Amino acid sequence: MMDWLGKMLKLPEEFLACSGGQGGGVIQGTASEATVVALLAAKSRRIRKIKEEHPEITNMDILSKLMCYASDQSHSGVERAAMLGSLNIRLIKSDKNFAMDAKILEETIRKDKADGLFPFYVVATLGTTPCCAFDDLTEIGPVCKREGVWMHVDAAYAGSAFVCPEFQHYMKGIELADSFNFNPHKWMLVNFDCSAMWIKNSAELVEAFNVDPLYLRHDKQGLVPDYRHWQIPLGRRFRALKLWFVLRLYGVEGVRAHIRLQVKQAKEFEDLMAKDERFEIAVPVRMGLVCLRLKGPNELSEKLLRRINDSGKIYVTPSKLRETFVIRFCVCASRTNSEDILYSWNVIKEYADEILAESTTNQDKK
Image (cartoon, rainbow, N blue to C red; front, side, top):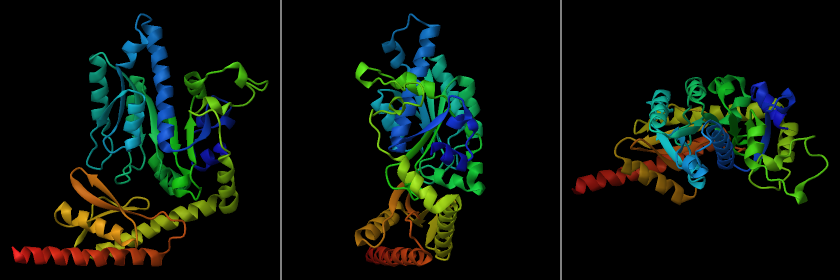
């Protein structure tokens, strides 16, 4: 199943088990889980290399100096992964497009090395949570290669869109990654939980996770991948089955049609909003995500979000881009149609009318 899915995304062959190499895919529970798994594999690899070069250094000395890196726009699960691993992390400043600045990343890694620290793990994001920004793998990847750092690519939401050829340019540079992950349960019609993860060298996962007591040994060891060494838990659910059902039911073209329709519906919402001068689009609309706000102070948009969600008619989520509060409107329900888009816009407009009228009344009283 993971080879089927990888081929749909046009992943490089070295990520696929059918290539005959060390690569392969595994279904994790969530993107946060995949981030932790990749981090632990990267940590294990880095410690082994340091010990080979400096056998006198203790594991405790190494652990206190290991460094992770991610964009300041990356998901909180990345920081949480570092926290769970008792590791240090630096959040790299994003550029004007809210993508990780590769130059700052490289400068930070080199400074840390000069200070005696051990950089080992970078998380690049394709489709950030706040505004669906895309880190440039063609810039970040070479930095990681030069500095000997593991690059994990988190495409939790946007990765489903890569089944469409017209969106695969966002993946340019993926061949430079050590691991890649996206969530079919987010936008590919698969029920939770189903988080697809690929790794170039599965031996590095096995090295990090392999504990082989007598009661877990069997006579088929080494003949097929033993996925208990590719994940945190020992046991596994049959998550590949629901992915198989979706691909057999919809087919590649059916999944592509679903993604394309929802991207189109996000544009429909953008067109409706563009006609109302009281609103502004905070960043260019990407995939199925529209980031909007009422013009003026953040308080207006904060009130609007609370009013919308309290109504129970639709649900939107908050985010902040630098210091600017935005409302995230994401098209993702499997049965969304154009009538739903128009209804949602009318709900937002209705509560915007109320809030702006109240704001005008309060100013008049002053």
